[in-house]
Image (cartoon, rainbow, N blue to C red; front, side, top):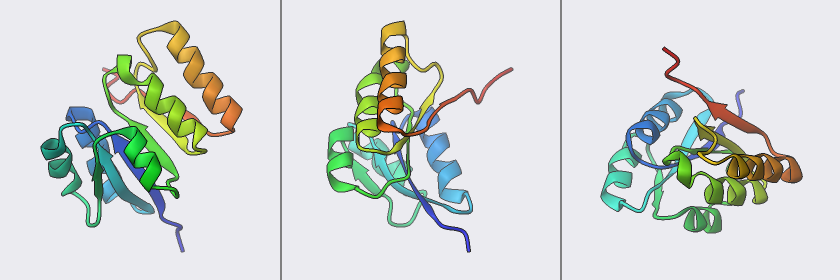
Length: 129
């Protein structure tokens, strides 16, 4: 039996909506939550999965959801740092859409936070061509 991995997506725009749809349909994954300050947009994306919750910030997500396996961060790259570090510090694996950051120092901080927490870090590059 495949263990279901609980996943949250931060960012309900184009790429976040794509990630949510993929996780909602993926065998072994459960789309647990969508995070976006635009609640109507987040609710529309959350409708792709039964029982998917909506939060308006990564802080609210991390306060409420303690058993996530992965958080996929699909915000604009200049907004990756705070949620990536917070998710890592919560002991949850991090996936960020490319690029990891628009600033080298922020990228290094994300990498360091994941290494310090002992969590996995993945950087997506879906649209290669």
